[in-house]
Image (cartoon, rainbow, N blue to C red; front, side, top):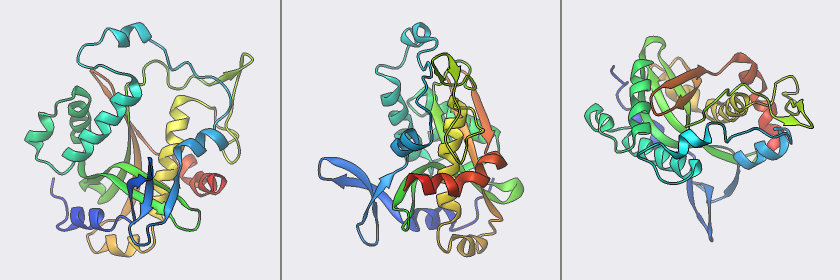
Length: 250
């Protein structure tokens, strides 16, 4: 798979924001002005997701006995994100020898899906809304000449479609997604939709990408487990609501 010449460099250099230190904390800052943006993850929890409970401890005993990882799922996800980001532009040989098994599965899954990693943790933002986040991976898909914003999730076991519950009743999300069940899968798709929208509507990016032969920007959610992977294309339902989701997060 041949990535258009100069596309990788453009995607890295054109990022309008990057994660940096602000006092004792880390936050996304504008590369041009130094302005600090609010992240979207906590705001999604506060303003879009329900107050219901999702049992994230499914198969807890199985996870505790797995070899090769010490620490909780948050630390594992952070370590995998960091490693995948560093190796995104590396050779196939280096990617296949990644220290963490989740990282190796990630690159194998991308290759199987026809996705060539271009860069990792690519910052995106909206100056008007004051929001920012990062694409876990930006990939090139040769078959339809598209960039794909990939949201990477590690180790979410069990039924990801089970809804959150409150007082024994299934919960739904808030507007503009009030018809969507508040499940693990839908939470991750909502996060992907917001990230994808920030990249897709970055000022001037469409015109710049056309110079490299990029036809469109798509989104995909990739789940990685010890032995398997699962890729979800971003559904039209979430694409249509992405801008409205971002507006309620401001």
